[in-house]
Length: 141
Image (cartoon, rainbow, N blue to C red; front, side):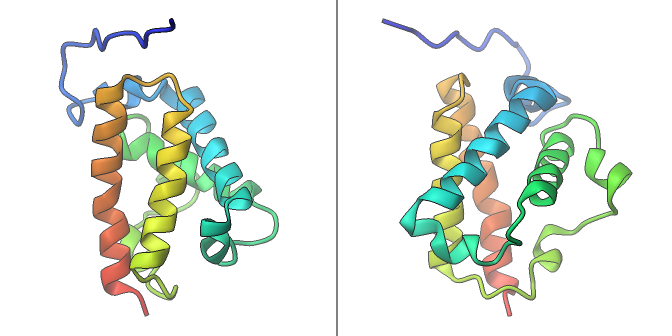
């Protein structure tokens, strides 16, 4: 039976770069993002949010990887490569209801479940991602 490795990092998620390291740094985040978009493209529940994205997801994948890098306490790649961003305002133009928010979170949950993350980090990650997802829903046009 394969057991997930215990979190041996004594720091708490959300402090310094503990979350970034728990996610496997940029390589791990990129795998998470690739799995996320793969689920978005394949799951019927995600069809509505897939339609909000361009046909070619290359830039979307890169932007989410760059964003999560900084958001999780690693290098601030998004602002270095693209621009400064306020997540809710950047998505304000999209029609996001609870259904779209939940579809996005479902894709992220399935993607996180595919990663070799410690269970406590998966739980933490999804709890933290709920916050911006809900804020997007609240400001949605």
